[in-house]
Image (cartoon, rainbow, N blue to C red; front, side, top):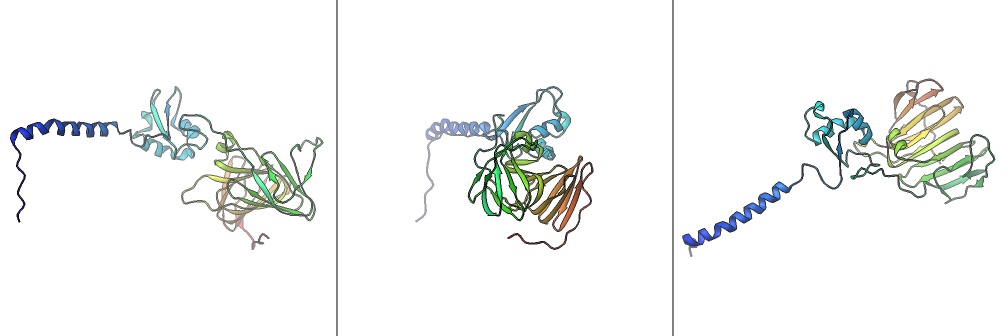
Length: 299
């Protein structure tokens, strides 16, 4: 059986026109209501102030200031010179620092335990009131599963060692004998300075030797998960197995077993690839990375 074409009268067609117009209008409203490309609840709107520069804005708001071109692209601005006082820039979450919310508020890192003590051998202690200045301090034996917070100090005695598990990023740190270290407090400024995300951890090594295993970084991840600060150097880590050794009060030796790390001193940063190490002497830039001897595995 052949299907017959539906028959409409002229009056029926005319009466249907207002409905079609209404449907078309609603569709157009929906299209016009679509926000500017990429603008959503995770976008911070910043109005450019007098004396602002693209470099200054990128450093203040972007997780990686080198992504300023991505910021221009996101805002469909073809030339940096078009950014003038009064211009509104949309700064999306995927470019913005983790410490800045979509409303522009500064976000402090999540509170909670910084690390948990795991394996302990020999004399290992921690303190919450120690000061390098030499003022009296109380030290307590560090036991397995002891919770450690920011600003806590840990020291190992002769023939002693300790293993710490950092709760937020999964980093494992082993402290060898005669080591003194502190879990530093992270805030918006320190995370910006060390190029870290909100789950990053900072360990100050005053003396001794440590080895660390930092979970591998993801493809394209430029955010550091772990940082070691010594009296002469800053070691920035994304996903790496490494050691940091305070040879003496003026010399830091750093080695990279897996991944890649960055060592900074005196305004210069050196990339250290897997299998290489560098030395930093007080008042000098890091030395050119050299090949490491075979690694001694962690227990």
